[in-house]
Image (tube, rainbow, N blue to C red; front, top):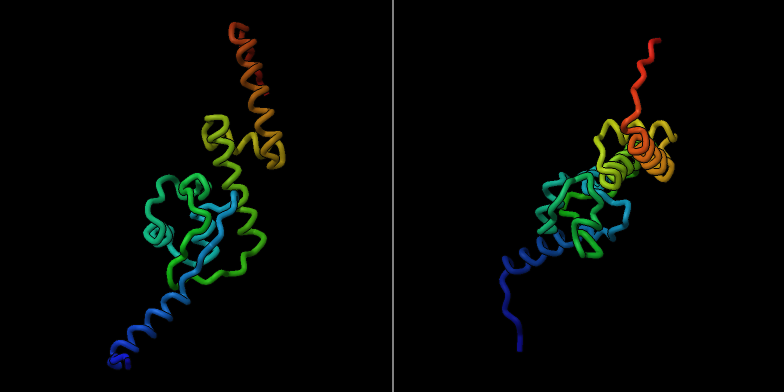
Length: 149
């Protein structure tokens, strides 16, 4: 049998093919955040969320904690962009801040202070945080001294 299809049908297929080729399947890593993927592909976080419903959580949280999927669909218009070392470092530090806050249940300012104090070593910052908490527990009743500079 011969298939009967109008020019409109072929036009629709062509549009569908071009849209499908514009969609990117991104393989999720532990380091991925929605903010980072938004910067990397030049697509709004809201567009990535809409293409991958449901994604519940902060845009700075690890994507792997927001979904059980192994890949994310990056909507049409997304094109992987070369990322400068400065942007990559800012994304790395943002992720570390979030991890420090989550692990230690501390404020952004506290997390940043401990990370800066340890030259952005997450493991050392966590250790310093826990050492500080232990110190405070053992010296809870001690008289506080004022330091005048």
